[in-house]
Image 1 (cartoon, rainbow, N blue to C red):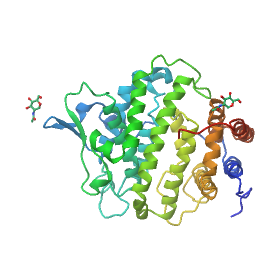
Image 2 (cartoon, helix red, strand yellow):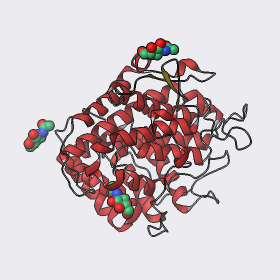
Image 3 (cartoon, rainbow, N blue to C red):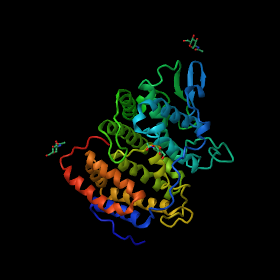
Image 4 (cartoon, protein in one colour):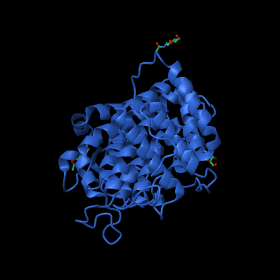
Length: 382
Ligand SMILES: *[C@@H]1O[C@H](CO)[C@@H](O)[C@H](O)[C@H]1NC(C)=O
Ligand SMILES: *[C@@H]1O[C@H](CO)[C@@H](O)[C@H](O)[C@H]1NC(C)=O
Ligand SMILES: *[C@@H]1O[C@H](CO)[C@@H](O)[C@H](O)[C@H]1NC(C)=O
């Protein structure tokens, strides 16, 4: 397959090529899905701790059931709503929305089911709400659902709840996960501390001033986004090595997509991208709406949309570009994103990929300028 521009040695060029390929091939005026997309079965998801079983003074959440795992997100959205009022009306600006919407996409596209076919977990013919411990996606997501939730528990969001809160362990692979705040501090101390820190920060952040949502973000809001992204990236980095063996159950293209998506999230994170309700829904139409099969080869997968096909190609280029440069591409991007000005350009660029291809090239030039301007930036966070 011939690319319009070869992948070059310089990280910047590889990244720019990736974007060029997207912008030259995606029709930015494709009909955009309605942004009113709540996660599947949202109305059946519990929205308070009273929706879970409490026995022997212990409230037990089963994170291996879609409704219950999603319930943790719904509860988090609800208890944090009062800190998010200035982020957007009706809690649509809540910084946590990216997580449940991603999880809903995983559920909708069959990614939480048992890929080994050894059980009917998650299959329509078996228990469709079952979340499988052999699914790479579901294991990765555990660290982005349970750990944030327990971080909020630790930060005191449920102090008035009279019972202890615990996750029920799966039947297999018990050692891969943790089930309460104490155990999680032992299993993944750093990630647990980062999520707890994020929720503590929310409680301390008052008076978050009104500002335009995009592209400018006020310093107080930027700080909230910074901390949720630090915790988010930490979850991915902690989970990736633990679950690499789960990749063997899925097709090679699906495994490649999963890993490159995980890597792309680090680029999105560095821009402090506001994955609120509307933005996440706009971006999610780019993710493949079914699991990839062994013979699938983007950009010519017939039953996936043009957007989905090219997003797969771009993710692949981004991943490979970062790999051949030994992480140089991400370092380049992070330095450009080191200043608020740089992040603003980064977010603009990510936005324009979706909606305004004509502005992509000038956007890339601005990123390069910000990279150069940030010569003395020391990168301390993710
Ligand atoms: C639950 O807690 C209450 C109040 O602390 C106590 O009286 C009761 O015995 C406990 N029940 C069980 C089953 O541990
Ligand atoms: C999301 O979109 C709705 C409908 O267009 C709008 O009312 C709301 O302000 C948007 N929320 C954010 C955070 O931008
Ligand atoms: C980088 O340099 C600029 C101007 O020379 C200075 O204002 C800024 O404080 C420096 N930043 C760091 C992190 O050293």
